[in-house]
Image (cartoon, rainbow, N blue to C red; front, side, top):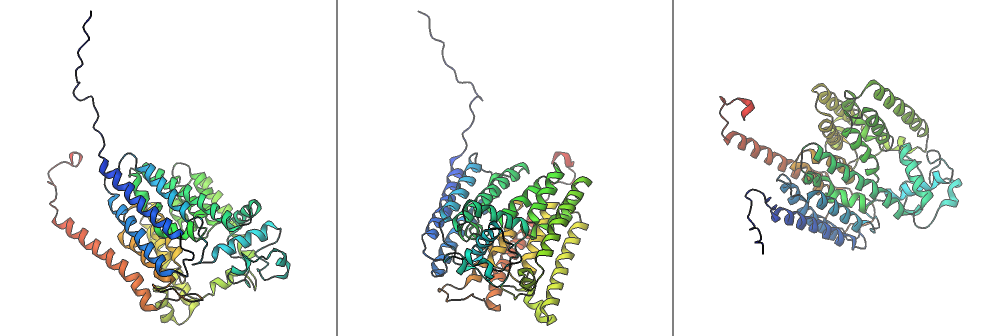
Length: 451
């Protein structure tokens, strides 16, 4: 009989197994965010049970904040899957929620119905007699300012009409928004990994409770534009023509993405620049032409009152005129854009700074506006803005359930809303500066290439 060859262990052939601790920790934090989303979805009304809503929101934020804080470590191999699965699960859990903190989605559904029926929502306000056959007992009574015509840009209305053609319901609109938000999360994971970051960096947006509740819960349509803005920034250098088209689509869906134009401009070819200018000129020209009129929502919005604004409140008190205050706020934002362009700050970082600047100088700072400030948070951790995504919930009211009508936070309350993030940002900045001072510098005689 032949002897069997003796088995020998070859040294160095076995690969070390990845540690289970980071993966289990990430899954546990994601489970906490998802569980909080499930409990939020079980509330009959976020508005009527505001205290419980804010408590569960704070619990979700605690899990989220820890996940963001720990995301700077080396991510486990399953991190991309965990980030995406938790993002999907938390959003699907909130999908059945009937919006109560904001009625914005009801106007979106209404305007989709109007356009799908062959009417012009820019010309006909919801109270117009011509639209009487479209009125129902579910959507129409919840449309804000029914005396005003549409304010949404043209591609936003086209999307609403498409949804209405398929199913003119609130839930169809929420699915439309959810699909764009999930595509946005996937793009962010893909983008941060391409930039050399771990997939866990995308948690800053993907698991953010503010993002979850405002989009999957309340049904604000911002992700429909956000996903195109991210695509424009991602491909500004590699595919400038596609980037130009993407930014144009974003700006004609929501106006805010147009602030990225000066920053991606230098990366585009002349063909891309001409294409973007043509699309924007035609689209915005039609938009401005359609929204001029006595019942136009855009004109009313430009003259509207303030809400939850801190800096703008002082600008208005100083100038004594809301219009002048708006002009000065726009000038301050323009100065920021010029400064970032002059210093040649990279397009993603410059866009992030401008979006955040817009959220500070705006006269109307609803909580969902701060989701734009969190959109590019995966590029780098900024504790103050992360905390602001929590404290901005004060704009909906304080812990006891609020009564009928819109809640207006006092100026002192607004200071609390903004001061806490400012203190957190300052504390982290001082700690980082102290750490840099106390950390011994490397030997200057060592060549840079060997460091």
